[in-house]
Image (tube, rainbow, N blue to C red; front, side, top):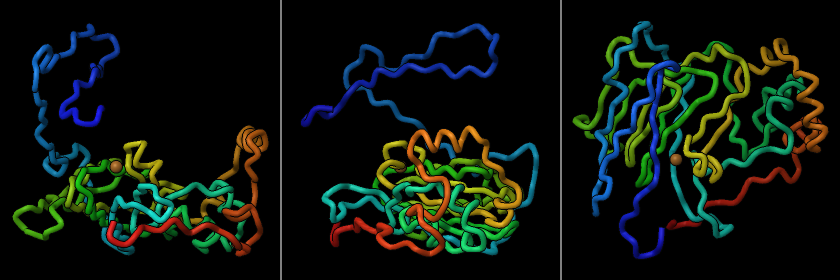
Length: 266
Ligand SMILES: [Cu+2]
């Protein structure tokens, strides 16, 4: 968009089709050939939906509060982060680190500070509290799990602006948390693996709005065998296939990058 231009027409047309053999209907065009047309959508609250398969929500063994913030960092770039820890990928993929670090796979440090590793015990109940302090909304996605949506509300804590789940909460793999709002979601750690939680807007993901669940490291070692092709691909790409985030052994993590850091006042 040009500086000074207040409105832009985005040339997107999309038809969502669920039945592959259904006749293709023409898309509904909103605001075509009209000037200054504003399209608005009512925010749909997933909490209002009732799942067909009714399951009670898990409890809470582990509580993970994450504050979402966009800021200017000391590398003069805008980054996004959970708890001011802006994500960057490790030299060695975290799954490979888990598979090649033995008992040290239980130490978050081996996955690299910037992957924001969160170790989960096998079968523990996890609640993630997402506090979005930004002025725009973010769709948060967790890999490997369908979480239960427990609460969504505004971070001013006004109970009038808070909705709590009914007896059998809706299960989703993505939840939009509006600006200045929070959500509590829960899942049972019953799927050992390396799973990312990230903003599903790819640009925000690239800006660092991501963290890594390291779920049940011993079960990962017991149950996972990497396909030979994956190891060949790593070799072709020059990606090391053993060791910690820095491609070294155990807790030798010298020079594991931690920064950049948010500038004060931004
Ligand atoms: Cu986002």
